[in-house]
Length: 111
Length: 114
Image (cartoon, rainbow over all chains, first blue to last red; front, side):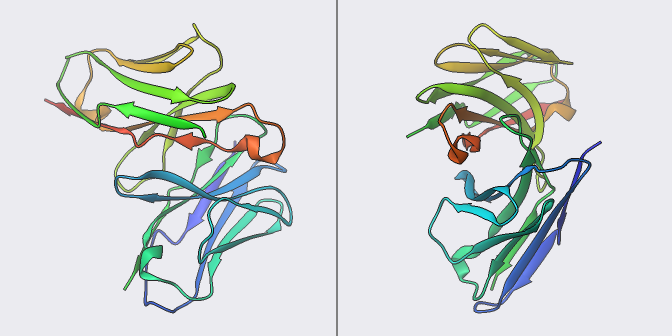
């Protein structure tokens, strides 16, 4: 069966510090991978998606970047965090045009 | 631009009191509509996929239906453990890599009181 791992679960970082969130998927190959952010009262916002290694598409201009160094690994990064980067970050995967399956999320608080 | 609107924003039900959640959508060609359940502090959990008007899916006390403009999530005789936020999302039938995207509504927070 397929599983998705996302870590850490919670993170408190000072403004201006770097960020690295990692997500890995097991039990499937060549998945589509996604990073979403969920802010209170605003729903899930798609940040990045990837249909293959090294292929990253960005949906929202921002202080964040994403990379896919391996088929089932997706990384969300920032060189310098802003207060507005606080939120609940979710990684997800799908196989083609099917439902997406989500990780358990990372609660990021920038202080 | 694809849009998904869910109503009501919050719903309180007595245990056993059946009701429905609404998801209205605007999309230029629907590839699929998805329902998720999300517990506080957790990632969304997949429930159903609906592809065409008239389709229905069931799982325990939940039943999802689809028309050309909206979807309903019917909850029959809910229990306290059904309390969660229910999210609706659509996938548009575009061409290219962008067609994999899901557009989410803001969700309906359901509370079932014992």
